[in-house]
Structures are given as C-alpha cells and as structure tokens.
Length: 345
Ligand SMILES: [Zn+2]
Ligand SMILES: [Zn+2]
Image (tube, rainbow, N blue to C red):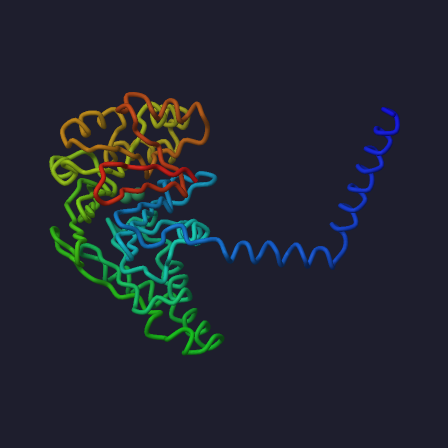
C-alpha cells in the first residue's frame, strides 16, 4: 500500500516537472503567463493615492558617492492630492516610476541647491510626468541660479522633446508642457495651497550659496527636509516641533577610515573636504533634543552604508529610533494623529 502511494507520488512529481518544462518552452504558455503578469502589474494600485495627511517617499537616499541600489538625493511628498519633489538626483526618476508615484499630479520640484547629485534627474522627471499626463508645465523652484540650471537643461533636451512630439503627436504630448519653468524663490513662505504651506530656510553648505532646506506643513502634520547642511540654528528653528526630519548626514568614523586608506590621493583630499559641509551623525542627538523633532530619518548618506557593519558604524551615537532610510521607503503621517508610520520597501 505504502509502495503504491510512493509510486503514485513519484509519477505525479514527474508529470508536474514535465508539464513545467513544456510550459516554460511553449510559446503559447509563455504568452499566457506574460499576459497574466502584465495585467496584474497594470492593475497594481499607485503607491501614493490621494491621502488625508502627508506621505513621504524616498526616491533617492545617496550622496555623490556611488552605491548599489541607491539613487542620489530625492524626496517625494504627497499632501492630499498633490505631489511635490525636493531635489532630483541621478537615478531617482527610475525609483519614483518603479514606486508608481502619481507623476501626473506633480505640482512642483523644489531644489535645495545646484550640486549635480540634486539636479541630474530633472529632465527624466520632466519627461516621465509629461508622458504620464501632467496638465501644466513642470515648475522648478529654487534659490538664485535656478533659471540658469533650468534654461540650460531645457536647451540640452530641446531636441529630445521635439522627437517625442514628432513621434507621439501634439495631442498626447502638448509641446508647451515639455518645457520646464524656473521659479526663483525667496527664503520664507514659498507656496501656500489650501491647507498646505511650504517654507524654505537657509542652511550652511559653504562654499555653496545659497543653499536651503524645506518644511511642509499640512493639516497639523509637518515634514522638514534639511538639504545638504551642517547643523545650524536656522535648521534647528525650522525643524522645531516637526513630526519628521529628513536629515543629510555624514559618518565621521567611516569617512576618516576611507580617508586614511586613500591618503595622498585625489580621492583622499576630496574625502577630507566632505567633512566640513554635512551634518555629522555624532551631532544629531543635540539636533533632536534642541528641535524637539519626533522622528529623525537620515538620507543623503555620506557614505551610503552598503552592508550591516557599515550600518552599525553609521548608527553610532544616533538618537534611539533614528531611521537610516533606503530607496523606496515611505512614511505616512495621517491627519488628526501623531503617528509617523514607516513602510519599508
Ligand atoms: Zn549632495
Ligand atoms: Zn551639496
């Protein structure tokens, strides 16, 4: 009896394997599986539908130092129905698109400064949101210099835009919506839309001037994005009482070890110069204490930690509960609540 059952089971396994091999190699079965997979992917809901509160999505958590699986600085904020970006570093548009951000609702991009690791993906965001059906031109806010950056990118990508329109037609891609608009902003209130208020504040990223950070306030919830900066009284003031602070951060123990290992080289000199214009992890406890921020989350990681040991060292001296962010991570701050919910990628 036992022998018969085992024989039956073995035959069943052989039949299943044979069917699997046939299906894998059969074009009919491949087409069926492809159709099912594509339909399921298309039906996947956008990760940031309109929301009563603030949602924050990390499109890029790295600094100029390259890291597998990390794009350069970019943070998306959804307030109600509207989507905003702070910075657009290299690779971040892919993370945003794969994360199914509703780019057709992209209201504006806010630049903290014009280092390449904060602006390189502007043309890709412009193209992707244009294709997604954004109903007005992509507005790029920034301090003095924003027009030079935006006008230059528009010039560099003018031919690409004309190719897209020629190929897909003006009805699908109205030409005027493919041209980015620069918007010079002053420090202070940048935008007020209904219950949403976006303010900017000066930071210290010398010798890069001006450099700013941004604060979003919406229905009693608040998110502050530091931009690249050391810790300054202005940053502490801007972050006062905020629910969530996304903070530029540098690990001195790691950077000093890298610097020693590359002493006498060009890279060693650059590593040394990194140290004076980013916030050191050892100073962040004081920042949290003085500002009263509820949740500290680190991004623009210098250097981006690539394994458990690096993360452990990067986390030294940090306030308890600090989050080292990763690309694709999301925070939810529901209105009428004190919760800061983290959703891992
Ligand atoms: Zn940077
Ligand atoms: Zn910078």
